[in-house]
Image (cartoon, rainbow, N blue to C red; front, side):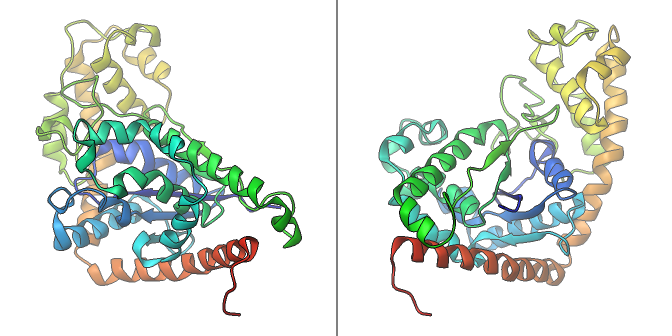
Length: 348
């Protein structure tokens, strides 16, 4: 029987924000109660863009530690679960090459995120950016993960992972059975997209995703923001002149209202319908005051703990090293099995 195992990761590209927290980290914390979990700082993914974007060596180190601090400050227990950075476990890159030889070019050509990130300058982006989904498949499959908590924008990549896993299982079905693994070696991982704020939008434009790359710092709440900054950004968030509706259907043509209600619901741990039952008919000025109080109570302690942990680099680095050691045991077992299944001669 396959052990239910969770894998997910966040890029260390700086300025972790509310979208990262509500769209991913909150689910990470919940799933550690019911699953064996590996949470990864995916630094190999970060370098698929030019150094000017990811900041160079010093900033990359700082950002790796910041994401690690965010994991721990949010409630992930590094003693019970595995927290590590991707580049410390070489099997991620090793399995990625094997999966490159399984994946089909046509599959990668359909990946919408590459088209969005490459834009019109497609010929000048790195091969790594194009091949990013295969490395992500390797991240998941090297641990034979069964569940992958992701945002809506990563669902297509998890679906590709399932296609790659299925093709490997089909291509080597006889060898998989002969090695004693039954009908399939890799499980087909399930994307886990849950919660009232799986896609947090910009505070300045409700039609755009909250992003660290937005030139306006008022478009996002950074996880390092203090109480004053959080309050100021929420009060300045774009809204419309109408009062809040009493039912969710009333949010459909109102992206900014929908976004703020979704943020409140996620922070309060309740569905949007309950938030609207409480605030329906109210003006945004009153609703924003309540949202400020809620956001500050939830996020300001998180920012303070992140700051404390980020200052203790020895502890953060020890968490990453311990996590990498534990992750490597699982990953090495997978690579041994993959080599045996494919017929590679290896050192015994």
